Length: 218
Length: 102
Image (tube, rainbow over all chains, first blue to last red; front, side):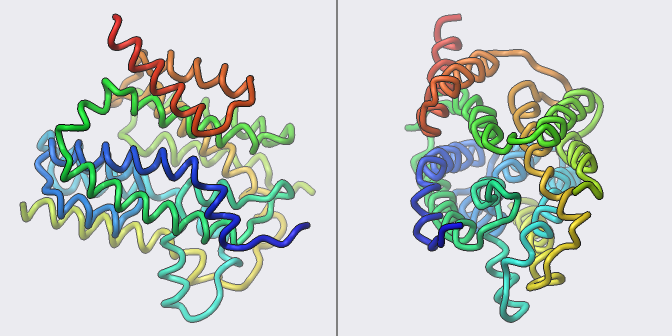
């Protein structure tokens, strides 16, 4: 097992961070279309730092869905961060405040990147990647929100299709065992079945149940 | 505008809390092995669900549109062992092209 540094994580995440900056810019554009001012959109990216939840909250507000629906949808979409943060809990040390602050760098991408082939997680990869992603995410949001219409329609640029491509590219290296493949297929199937019947966020949370395939096996 | 800031405050607080559950309550202690086995499968399960919800997800419905072409293009790029950024760009360009032409 080779030693890693924070900059290894920072370097490895650059391709994803560039895509994240583009998504953040599209969030800025969409937030503005939903009536959220550039400052508010940027503050949301800085305090929430979780793309899908932000998109969900903004779109619900924009279509008049109300505060409760927007908050619930976003919280459901982010509920996965409870088990995710538990999975990497041992990487965080120091005072509770320090752990609280550092844990905000946990996002799907930094977490997936920091997972070693043996199933353990690497603190340097997670924090290094998380910092780069955070800067790109907040900066991209500000650029998108201020730049506004000049970027054009995110859908016509195909940015919405970049999301699944990104998650698929992150998924492929994770599927190294039969159990991992089974968990991926089950998770995808659960999400697909629930998609037409449940609010946004529920299919993803329910899919996490597929990880129970790994219960008490060596 | 007040509505917007209430949502931003509540969503931010919820997210900060969820992300800190493990590190603040469990920091420094390793997970029991039988739980670690479960957690190691969270990534494939959740990533697969994210692929599905992002590619065919609509407003509580399944929507088949140009995103599927983008994902197909991404699969081809992955099979050709393209780097991640290229995979993402290929997906976006393919989707944008379909929307432009159809």
